[in-house]
Length: 201
Length: 348
Image 1 (cartoon, chains in turn purple, green):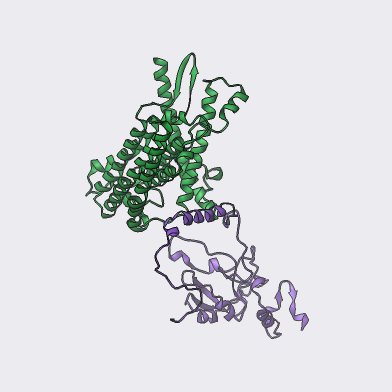
Image 2: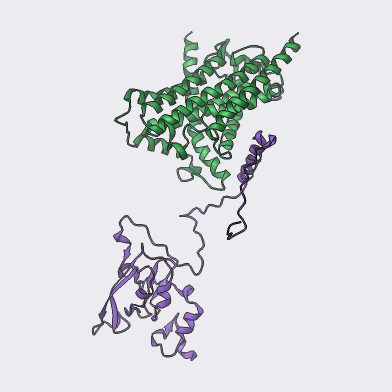
């Protein structure tokens, strides 16, 4: 026998049909009773716009670029995410923070341009894992459909979260991430969820 | 005379409307029923329970672009769907929808016309129907369409023989009449023809599936092999007419089966019910209740057609021909022989 990955395959037999099988009718009735039994089963459909399927807590959907509690962008344009990205979906251009922009950007360097091509992205989450600044997260939002290919290249306008409608990413905060956050040297994680984590140390 | 003409005209319009309405809602119910058998929901967006779906589909068909291929024979290309639709509608003429009723001292038949060769007329019109498919498929000047048309015509010819022989046996049991009205009236007293002709009914049912091009005999369309079969080149409402006429055919063949083998507008304990309700012989209510019973049977048969379609896979072409010529025709001959012998000894 040839190599088998599972033991579910069956050897095909080409034997002649028996007289009973040639009648067709027993098989027909058997088939019809099977379909009839399905008439009384609950439908498996989720009626989408009214009813939404529950997403897994670790669902990886559209990305978000987080701001800190003061509204400054966390991303420092280090490029770790772009390096980590297996689909090469992320591109960015960095710029230096000027005086008076402290409320906009958290550190001296920031991403002037940050683009993710949603058609290339495979939603693996490696960008989020690579990010040292807790800036990029995958969320449970689904990427919209568009008519043009260009519209799938999401810029900062679509990626950076708005302070008026903040996006909860606590579900994506794995124990390792939380452990990382507790490192006393990391000033940028001082405030999270309204709690002063620094006090614990 | 005038009352008679007006009555017949009104009846024609009503029956025409009913067959179109039933065909339209068969398309809806087909999709609903299929989805129930497959643990789905089916159309549910157009109106409550998707009830406006046939209207939406019809509207869509009208507004689609109409394409007549340059290489086609334009006259025949248009004639095809027309012929198919007309023959589908013509068959409902001889079907007795209910008992005769009296009004103003006049006898009205709940049937458009009771010709004494009703059964022959039915078989004749049904076999003209195949010309619609054949002409349409041939005029398209397309390989797939032609193949579909050839399959449809050879299938219809093969299965009409077995169907005809099954009907002959039926006619012998109902005393040699070819009038549908009389065949149904014969079943008034108690037993329906199915009891005498179970094998005949089975043959007739299988042949009816083949004649209406329904799965498992839908080799004429066979979308997995022949794109769309005979209607590959058709678009817009001409395609709509083809699809629609198939549903009318299904409705009519259900009606014929119910009339031939299951007593038409008769039902068990009908006379007891009428007596209990105090209805006189010839009352219009008797006709209407009978029509209700008949309609229920028709709907059940339509459901059976759909149930078969969503269960069985399509036959291969050689299997189809083997079944038709080597199984159904001999079986129907055996059935005919037995019926003849039994009828001979009973009548002696």
